[in-house]
Image (cartoon, rainbow, N blue to C red; front, side, top):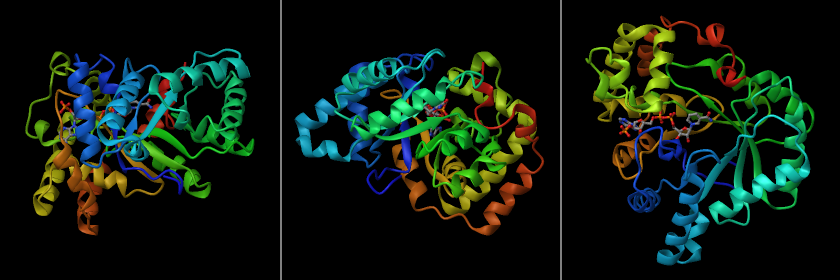
Length: 329
Ligand SMILES: NC(=O)c1ccc[n+]([C@@H]2O[C@H](COP(=O)([O-])OP(=O)(O)OC[C@H]3O[C@@H](n4cnc5c(N)ncnc54)[C@H](OP(=O)(O)O)[C@@H]3O)[C@@H](O)[C@H]2O)c1
């Protein structure tokens, strides 16, 4: 990610423990976190509002230190978010919220604080980021980052001289909005993209190949429901099946899974620092399959086959707007 913050480029996403994706057993979840860590998946993506996610990091770190010594903690990276309600952003308010995350996660310094803002008409985001940058300089945060900012407002932040190292955005074979403006801007300013939705809640996997269009009630997680809507906007189930079929042919050729091809394609895009894949801790896991992404190399023919389907999809930038526009109030 940065020289002082090496990461696993496949990050474990913890929105899946929030309750919106089914119940999670706390003990089984912590045990599973240790298994992810042992398998080399050492980087976690979470947020202050993902239910117990920050507390899970705290408990996981305590278990890891008890079992492997405090040395083991140096290999963990935990990236949280702060998603405040709009309003005045004083130093005291910002600091108070950061303190809560520090306490819950059991750390002296946050590795990465990803800041979200609901309303660009309220310029309080610049105050909040200025205070976050000061807290970084004082050692409470290693790096300041963003989530769901569009290119226009990312540019304003950069022009204010506020250093941010990454922006977390939706980016997948279905949702390629970052390629319109964001990615180029990030390349020019040494900002990395951390991507979510890259396996579309699991829809971009062999599970859905040659399957009839799922009804809303068959979509059992918040994530599946969210990305099914993206597929509908992009081109519908018929075109999506063509994409899955094309990915499956490529996956067969390389002896990997369909989902692995979908992840590798995005990992290879300019400015992408890492792909976040949601983990339903203690319920389901894809560790071995996910690890194959690091040895997979897609060739020009693979990419051409994928792009031949993608070019028939609708332009989501025109339909929805730039990155994160669906989150503006
Ligand atoms: N900044 C934001 O606004 C924002 C928004 C959304 C998400 N996020 C972050 O991104 C993370 C990912 O969330 P997401 O909603 O985008 O979900 P996702 O990663 O697109 O989907 C996660 C689901 O995909 C399935 N899956 C993963 N690997 C698979 C594989 N190899 N084969 C088949 N299925 C596979 C799993 O389903 P099963 O569990 O059923 O196996 C898993 O629960 C979140 O946890 C969060 O950290 C951030």
